[in-house]
Amino acid sequence: MSDAPAGWTRDEMAARAARELQDGYYVNLGIGIPTLVANHIPEGMHVTLQSENGMLGIGPFPYEGEEDPDLINAGKQTISELVHSAYFDSATSFSMIRGGHIDLTVLGAMEVAENGDIANWMIPGKMIKGMGGAMDLVAGVKKIIVVMDHASKAGDPKFIPQCTLPLTGQNVVDMIITNLGVFHRVDHDSPFRLIEMAPGVTQEQIAASTTAKYEVAL
Image (cartoon, rainbow, N blue to C red; front, side, top):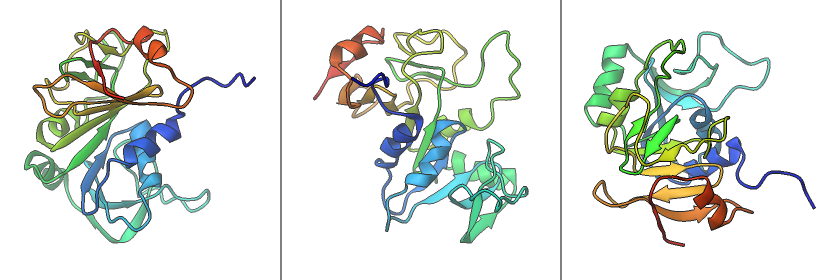
């Protein structure tokens, strides 16, 4: 019997998030696991990636030895450009975000509450370089997907009844993808529903690692 833990890897979580993309979408990817989504855009699908540090049209991560230190995403990772890539200042970038021109964002999170609140920018007592564009993204983007580990490194649930950390946004999350499964809600007045489980994961495991209320729709 394998000793490998049940559930999705970080790359598999990103691949699952990529299944939510649609042709013609403008998409912003947060730092961490969400950046991996760029490597899983379905073949033949036209999706334009936007980075709040001023780039529209982001390619996949470059191969080793082909990195350009001047081409980075919001997480300071080296990226590649495309023939149609465009560059602009932060004012233009955030006008796109705040103006509702971005269809979907994939973000990481430290906590998500059962009512859709998200906390993803600050841990009290720890040095944080800044909130980045997260608050603008959750307020201005049409669909918010959170990709995160189901539990913290200490084993504490991250999908909880109410956030304990400073909020990034209130009642904004549409979908949560963790290493254990996928939760979705049809609108911001509806509860989250468990719609998919990662291979090898049981409903009992998810329930034991979740303190938030949710429905099961499998």
